[in-house]
Length: 610
Image (tube, rainbow, N blue to C red; front, top):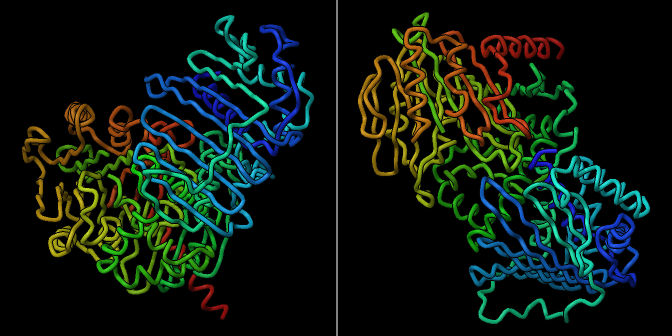
């Protein structure tokens, strides 16, 4: 069992214990370090899981090495009754306190001295009431649900053996489940350890409104509890996914104006028609994937971001959208409205989510002419972006043909209509690399400009004119290419300025120019990419192009890689899994022109049938 699995187990033990239904059986602290005593120590925790107790307090500490750094999280959970509890989670950089009472819920961020306070009604499905919380947090899409089902159905002896088996082969005598001299339950494997202490008397409850010296932000209670419930649920799906996510059923589907195919194990969705028809088909074909994407962005990442910044994440999204909306084409808004309707979600939420990339800020290259084996242009795009929030579960390559617009391929994610990696039927390919400048939102969203370029540009000059004429946001870098003319350009764009970097041009940030090449990245990844291009200069083809994007040019967070061959209408796509970055995953070759022809044939058959 590796370190990742041990961290999953340790953290799962914490949260599984925290969300048990109700609490308290009298018990006596056993003597340490015998199997019988481990079983005795474990029994009260199993009682909480099974709902055989009524009030209790748990104090815990988890120590783990994450990203090479030792991390410590302490916790205190005080359960008062079936509707009320306190939870404190403290980390050196982040801390959160939650108080829930029958009519009030509070989420406090001590580092920022702010509290988000909600009163009144709650959702009937996504809420934090202790009774039945496990069924709301653990779905069939996480292996934690299997562990939980086993634990609540087995006697303590079997549960102790199960935990021991999960921890795997010991590397030392201190590994496994043990009992401390004070009766605390210990779980340890390598660098990860967990300590849990259960007592029968919780600390006295304070009012959920009692936060002296804290700035209060009022949030609808149903929104507050939905945020936390769906955020935790999605975290478990990403952290410890079941086969429903790691090996999804590859079932083809058709709806009016849309089709879902599986090609080489990847989702490919074909959409055509008016903006409304395209948006509707998108939502009908990708409902489950869109929900996973929304939960990852809005609820899981959004909760972490709220804790980090002290600002309510949905408010940040809405504020960004208000400033960006005037620069989004009406046809894109119409498509998003239809998507929201098909997904049965709030339109304002769908519109705001589609500007998510603007809040956060990869490598790219284009080689051609003398640099390549056959003279063709090869455009590589590496997206290094937060695999930890599970966007790979929504990874989809779209082929979109909106009435009156240039058809295009968009390597993206369910529920997002913008583009960060794409190629159109006129041989134009584009890739984006984020920079700085969060908050500079008085312009067209980056993903909107990318989508517009794919729909509107016949030449490289068309793309360049679009960027020059459009109000821009934040700081972004791009590689734009035209397979018809074997031309490419690098771009450094901010709201105030735009710089075009030509093939072979030297640049202070990029180094000496390489003839017939654009090479963009940063730090050691740039050095490695440049070295690779120069070492295989004149020999680069599709196979070498994919090698150029391998680790360490791609980071551990590598979400997708794409190699465009726009002159042929061909592109190669690799998507991350839950255990591997995209660069270590197999590529699938897709032919945009063939896919568009199949869409035309289907449309003709449907017309004839009418």
